[in-house]
Image (cartoon, rainbow, N blue to C red; front, side, top):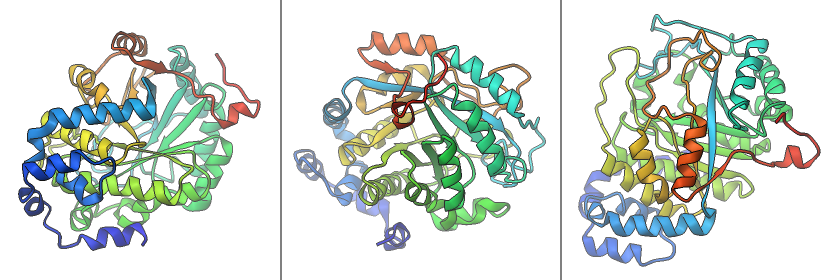
Length: 375
């Protein structure tokens, strides 16, 4: 069954009613199993399961250490263009906002790359707004050709591409894709994305599959928490990741649970997710998806990130700027306010102090074949 069919299967499903019917004993039974089903996973998002967070946290820690050891990858985002044709009300880059727009030249991309590389980071996430006219596929290819001199892994978080376009950027050096569905709820998605190319729900939903078919090495999916019911969004995020793992077993699949942060405009968060609920989402996901990566970004505070690191996290961002040009001066308007301002050195030190092994460099397939990035 394609993933669109899996979503359709739950069209009329009442997530809250199901979760309200879960008992404490059912949660205990689920936690005693080595493998759990998708409905078991949903039960771990229930109010009853919230009373078993300590047991869930212990199980999540054991599973994470068993699959990933103490390794935690450090990466940083690099915003290279913030022009956008979409009218998403929850994003500062949306076309209706009068913000400082910037689009880096290839030379400016290299300057940003050099400054980031000085911190020791070799994992980069390249971001643009959704304007194919400004940030064309050819522009992305040119930027990646520069970035591959400095970084061992290059992921992109850009507008959804056609399958052959993913092939082109993979060919020049992209090996990771992050793409958030924002919300898996189809009516709400259509309501929030009335203007711009992002209005096509299915085209966005199937983007990871197109990249996987072209040989991408890593894929991260997720929903933007705060837009809709967190149980529903967490459920579909995990199911999406599980589907990709099954269909493309050679791809490293990860999930992320970004919470809405302050931004340009006056968008109101109708479904806020508190820290306890966030921990429940993360630990339940680890118990369901034993081998999936889990990313936590600087949307979360330093104290909170430190506290949840042992519970399943495998990748963190550091030295973050959400502005175009933020690593070399003259920055644009930021996409959102970050909550953890630690630089790379501080993050690396803090990870080691907590008993983790910071991973700054990935000797992936490109470099095993004889290429190298600048040190």
